[in-house]
Length: 502
Image 1 (cartoon, rainbow, N blue to C red):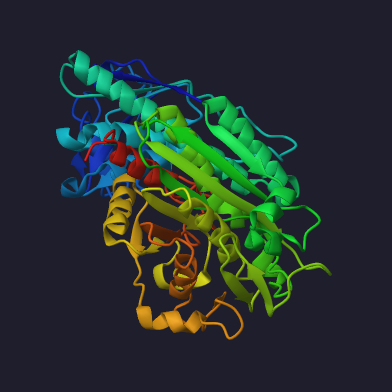
Image 2: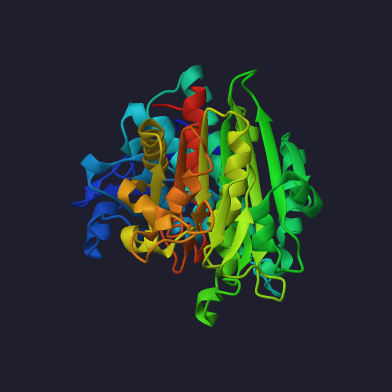
């Protein structure tokens, strides 16, 4: 990982390999562009046909240019000036992060595109963009080429002269960006790891190792303990696999005796669909069906390192959904933690079955809120596409706060309605509830199934089926796992602890 520093030195005076400077749509010169004398940077940028739109970039060598000590200037489009935001910084530098990774030293004025009120968020977002954009998963490459991953130092440039408080706040924003990005990248690693190497027990071991490293309290529930505890959903989904299920329990204590925020995420280590088996194409990326669990683990890691003054607990169910002679069958009835029964009509609607247990378990802890994340339904992807997660719950204030945190962190969500007439679609003739409704409105009926297990605790469900795993590269993620919504969840927790800027 590169080292990050904050400075208020002039951009043109820094002896770095690459100086990254923003260009607004027009094109219009962004902070630092006009400081580089002796070369018409904006003219060269415009000559390529670039307008300063997001995603556009141009590398300009500066050999022989006496007015700058940088070896090259990388101009990056950030979009309209009046739409400048921390997320524009994250996306702009994330786009070129792979290119920057081939250099040893980099400096940038990107955070200066926003006003003073958003400057710290922009510094944090720039750090996140560098790290998340340069991420790649190559542990299974027999000849991984590290020659182009030499980036050693990134200097974030502030405007004017910084006093002690400004420098201290900037350094804390850098640290926060590093912690959150590293935690999100770890979540990506978990999701990208082939299911053969990350069954429930191994995921639990990874979680315990992380917890020990960062100072979380942890407990892993074995199959025998799950049976004793009445976790019929986790056990039912996992009984078709020779690799038994687990429940991962984590605890962060930063708020004294205050009620905790409770988190859970769907941890299906591999989803074949069970006896309601998927087709071969549908199974190709089902190692990612534990993206919800990974996002919660990444969130807990970041929280432990950032140390907000609040309590947070997590209970993460993990199972493999496989077809075999011991697998649950359509028509079977499971008894969940707390006694509620569910009729399983489709074994490929398994995520809600394991989450039901963890939600009921967390509700027993009397938390202030419960948030769950899950790659739960294709129906949510039909509604919202691949970039936006869906939010459904029983408390509008909680939903609003989580959506606001997602917007602030650059991980947007959208509320879907809990339309009460749809509740009858999951009534069962033989059990308390059934695990599927009709074809249409599937994201909503899935959320209504989960709602049955939270009691009167404020709760929101985040269906991350779209943005959790990318089929093509984006602004700051390669093809594969994105780690969504780690940043949104951390932002929510920090805000509730009073440690994040409004």
